[in-house]
Length: 162
Length: 448
Image (cartoon, rainbow over all chains, first blue to last red; front, side):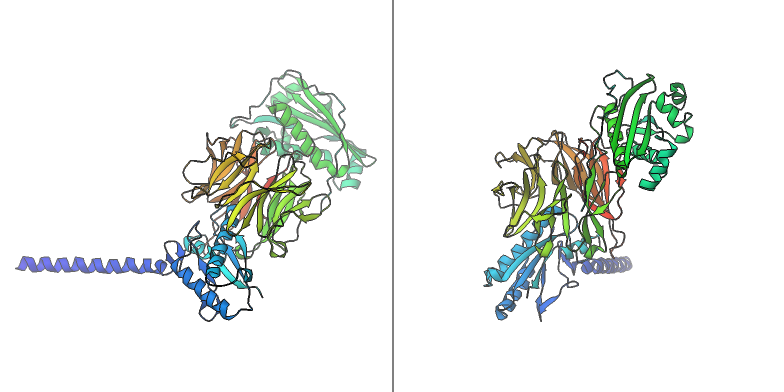
């Protein structure tokens, strides 16, 4: 009995310490997870708003121009806003991070901007209200050289043109 | 705007070049034992010194020219210029007839001597190259030019010496066009800049009002094609360096970028991006006829012709990732040539035709490398945190590229600099620029 009690106590101590350490690791990872999913930025640090509740930008994975669920949600909000403000035209700016060759990144930025543009068109916005421009890696919004900074820079930003 | 002053040079003495000599340099391998060479100050008499001060504000242009030569030979990595303090013979005497024993004593294997006069606003320079071991003259040349061209005279002497001793053309009388960079990473100001290959005579060709990228010389080095965001429309432009005239050449409804001249100078090859797809096009500069070369839903960019105009190498992600391809110049016979691990970009065909230089990204590191035109024999020359965009020296022996440093979370510690490395993988060195710099392009030899 005594033996099993002390065994149980030890077991509890080990279990508790495991939980504590699990919490500790979880805390550090959630900090990053809160801002990145895979390597797509999901935070709001750099985001501006075209109108109340209408974020101006969406983020991409490395070398990708695929729109995430969250990006599509943002772009639908932009489409709704554009529909409600039919006199406003926009420029979609495509950007890449600094970890690629300059020329390829110009093409990649153009591809990203067009991915966003195409989605807006699907949601009923006329193509002639949307122009695109790629800046490649020339206009980072975050000047750090780390994965989080790079994730903020892989973006397309919808900007009012008039 | 820059005026290229034509340099007239007269060959006084005929080359004694065919004579057998004991010294020669093998530049096909890494040279860890550079040739000891003595570059004697070029002799200048008192009358010329006075004229030199009047014309150039330089007291002894002869000495200055010898310093240009010495520096060129040193940065080539193939020569070891000896300290002038050890020289036993005076410049004027040595130029007439060196005492070979004296120069052999300080371990020189070759000696450059010369004489400079400035009269009637003309700079006359003669020089001789001596083989110390054989005890004979290897070559003798003389040039006449305007005094302000004195640095170019130094570069031409360097080229002649390099050619005589290595058997290959030099690359010293050349220029580098590049993008000068200033300001924080998030608001970088970029200007086109041009300088002599050794970092002197920097001139800025644009004011920095608009973003400019990727300048490249035409074969005669009189024209430059580049990408400008003038009026926020990214387009390929053409700039005449002599007149300063700029014109847009890629004014298509979309973005044109990644321009380069064809080796005959008649066409510009570039990428045209529209609706999320980049393909390769050419424009004939004479009749402005545009031809589509690739037609693929992937990104096709960074095109570069083979020196015989028959093939094009380019960068495409049609396999899913950035790789290097080669095709015939009409766009047929597309073949992937890069198969190593990692991503490949910025292929550039060597002026000798046998190699393609590239940038490679693998496991978070960037490499500059070369491979044969069928993709075999891949050789990585240098590894770093970030570097890309190699450009060949006109003799195909050296690559210049740019390198960026990592910044901290605040963006501090960032820099962009030009670097060069020999094809052998040796002799890596920073190329001096007044500001931060990127996107270098090497000119052809100016005096040929």
